[in-house]
Length: 240
Image 1: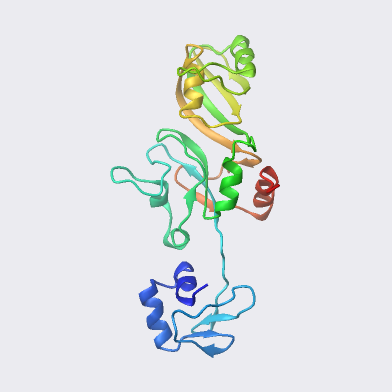
Image 2: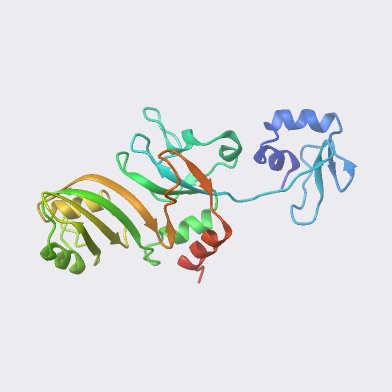
């Protein structure tokens, strides 16, 4: 990787600013000052330092966010704030993107990363990575609904969903449920309940694969995944 790109990615400034550091002789590779911005370095073996401080290169970033209901799951939008607008500069410098999407008014667990291979595996229809939601539903959710969901329900466009696991937490005119699905059709949870004549009035994703939403994260907050969480995600989406 080019030295200017690497340092820009590591938030040492824009490429233009990195070039100024190079010209001043403040950047060394294996102890030798480097002034050529196009010089390629090996992040596995080369020792890179800026003003004497060693650069610890990180290629990928993995963030868990508790998405609030007033931002969209996109990298940019002309009309709305996106989840990337909630990131600090240090994380934004890695150019992460949301893994999948949550509707604007849906809260909860959202994974952001710049690891394209992991994203592809997690979203691949062949992997059937389960996603669990908590919802408040207008209408009494019953055992009959559970049975229908377990067999798959027909959406408004004729699509029959894959079997889903519906857990009833509270059953009354304002029911509370958890629903686990293994696909991600447009507005799927809301449309599944519409198929049984009920309306979702609040929706929050609480789990994706083995990754559970950290209850200590307030809406709009995020943190890096720990090693155990990342390893579990890798097991959820094996490359072979």
